[in-house]
Image (cartoon, rainbow, N blue to C red):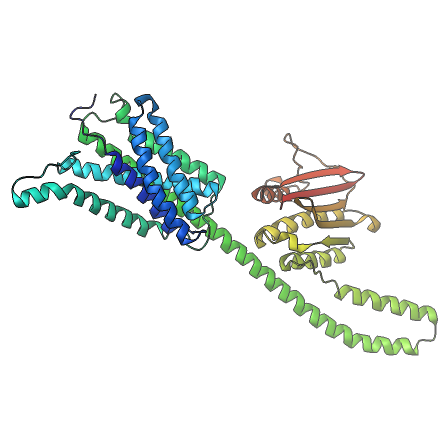
Length: 447
């Protein structure tokens, strides 16, 4: 039992508070529906939230949880339809709005109880000024508290959400937010269930103080979580931009080197062509032409897949293969990588080709130094397949992963792990197959 129990928060106040919390986040987040629809949804949503609260109040006590779930569902529909969010994004924002509503409602009712303005019905005092105060003070406190709290929440949260892009909500972030919301709600209302716990209060004012404090902590934790998620996303975007800039710089250096090489080649060709014209022996002339073809082929190894990052990687690796006597054949549609960050493209193809070049370089027979790369579309998947010939023994660990062949295993063997991690980020899978001395790495990424 709670000593000096305070009256419950009026259902009307709770409904308005939950509606204002949804409205606050709709204003903050990126909205993908016309303003007319947002206004209509919010207008209908206010009436719906009031109806849901009074319906929940009429339910028996054992259906109290069902009433809360109806209120949360109503808030979710307001956010989802009013802002046009995705389902996961809408669930995440609804959880944030629910904790904010609990905090503001509890804080207002605690202040009203402290000032003696929490009566369900306020009768006017016959005296003039006192009667006016008795009539309008509860309304004024409600308006001022809600206005200050939700304005402050808007000012704080608008820097934590993007107004021109959807909120990036990973499964981990959504699950963590829902878990924090449930724990916050359970702990803030624990005293109403039982006062005989280390975290419960037994006095009316004390119960609301605990509830307000716990709700504030939950809101602060969710705020910090969103800020951290924004920082991680910003760092990833910055890393992707840096990778793209580095790729463009490497492309510039490669183009500059090609231009200089072609200039030297053109200068040498003048003398070689003059020598060939003076050559009488057909065999010597044929050998000279063959040498010219090899020289031209060496400087014409440019890849044009449709993705500038992939072009730089393939061009660089093609020259590395040429230096080692490796034949690299690449058939790639770079446009299929449009949804992948530059950093992930560089890491995935760079690691895969580096592993293939390292394994193929060990082959004694130049005819066996073969690497084949294919990037194509198959149904609803983007397929990346890299094959190379090998003749060494492959060892695997207990989990079925390949062991590195380098001596310092603690500092190597991360190439395939990195490829798997990148593929999983895009909902894809990696398979490795070895057959007839061909090592085949296949990455499937849903389109």
